[in-house]
Image 1 (cartoon, rainbow over the protein chains, first blue to last red):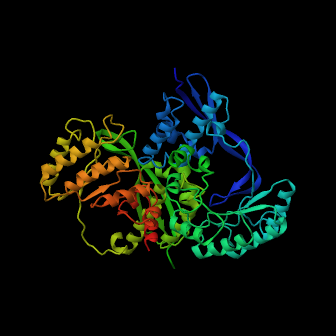
Image 2: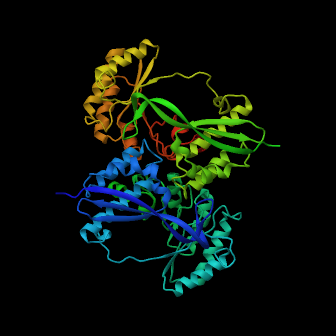
Image 3: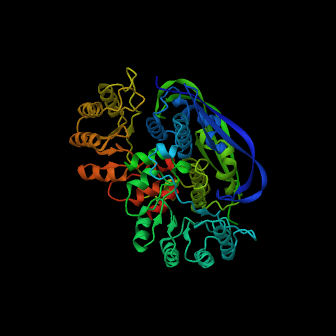
Length: 294
Length: 294
C-alpha cells in the first residue's frame, strides 16, 4: 500500500531574532527581539513526518486551509511532481494564496518527508553527484551603522575576518534603498576595490548589489569588477528585462547571474546568459525548476 | 500645495453572489449565497476620495497595514508612477504581501482618485484616443450542468442568444479541470465548430480554453479555429514558456494572445507574438505595463 498524506499542521511559536527587516525587506543586524515563526509538519499514513520552518506569513490560516494544503490530503507521498503541477495550475486562479513562496512550502514539506522515509538526505535523492560543495561567505546588505557595513573600508575589514575564518570565497551584498546614499555605482565599485585589496588574489569574490541599475550603470560596475577578477556579477538590473541580461552578458566575460525572483520557468526558457537556480527552494520551488530543465 | 495621500481605509461588507469558484479558481454560476467583499477608500489632503472594490484576500489587515499601504501616506497623489516603482522594488523582499494583485489595488486606487480630482474619466487621462470600443460577450468556463455550458450544443445555443442580444463578437471559455472530461482537444474544437455553425460568418469569435495544452495539441486546436475564421487564440499553453508561444505564432496566421498572468514586464520584453495587455488592471498593474511600453 503506497503511503498517502494524512495530515498537515501548522504550529506558530515564539522565538528570538537578532535581525531586522528594513522597509524593502532586506535583513540587517538588530538588537535581540522576540519574533514568531511557523513549524509545518506533514504526516503520512505510515506515521512518517516531514517538517519545514517558514515565516508565518506563508502559512496564515485562511490562506493555507483550502487551496494550499487542502488538496494534498489522501495523495500519494511520492506524487510530489503531480502535486506541484496541480498547485501551479491552480495558482493562476489563486495568485495570492498560492504565491510561489507558499507553493515552495509544500515542495519542501514533501521532499523532507520523502527523505525521512528513505533515510537518505534529499540531495542524494535528487541525483547527488557531488558529496561536497564549496561554501562561500555571503554578507548582509550594506547599512549605515558605524562598525557594520557602512563604508568600503568596513567591507574590507569584514572580508579579512572571513578569510581568517577560513572562507575562500565571499559574496558582497552592497547598499540598497531605503539608505539615502543608495544605490551608488561609485560606492559599489569602491567596496569591491577595497575588498579585493584586502583579501588579495587568492580569494573568489562575487557581487550582488542593487537590482535596478540601468544597463549603462550595470556595465560600469561589471567592467570594474571584471578587472578585479570577480567570479560573477549577480542581478544588477530588473530581472524581468531578459533582453537587458542578454545584452550585459554579451559585454562582459564574467558570468552575469539571474534571475532569482521571477518564476524559474521563465529563466530556464530563455538562453543567452548564465543562470544559477540556487535559490528556488527559498524563492520559487525546486520541483518546477527541475521539470523545466529536462 | 500639492495634494498628498492622507488615509486609506478598508471596509469589509456582506453581499450576495450567484457565482462560485471551483477548486482551480474558475467561476461558475451558482445558487444565491452570502459573500464578503472589500471597499478600499483613499483620501487626500484636499478631502478628495478614490475607491476600489476588491476580494477580501487582497487586503487582509496584517498584509496591508505595513508594506502595501503604509508607505503611501504623505506621498503626492500624482506620484503614482513613483509609488508603483517603489512597491515593485519592495515586492522582491515581500512577494506575498506585495503580490501583483495587491499592488494592483494601489494602482487602481490612485488612478480613481486622480480621476475623481480631475473630473475626467481615467481612460481619457491615460491618452483616450478612442471614445468608443467594441465590446465582446465572454462566456464563463464550461461546466457539467445540463442547460449550462456542458456540451458543444449548449455553447451554440448560448451563442445564438448572445447574437440575438446584439453582440457581434463572442469569446468562448471552454472546459477546464477539475471537470473530469477536461481538457479535451476534440471537445474544444467541437464547441468552436458548433458555435460557428450557429452564428454564421458575420460574428467575430475567439477561443480562450485550457492553458496548459502541449504545443502539438495547441496547434491542432489553432488550425481548426483558424479554418473556422476565429479572430484570435488565447493562452493555450503554459504562459511562462515564451518559446512555445513564439513557435505557435509562427505556425498560425491568426493571432496567438498572451500572457495574462505573468508580470507585464516580461511579456513586453519579448517580441515575436501578439500580446494584449488588456487585463493588467485586474491581474497585474497598469502603471508598470505602461512604463515598460515606453
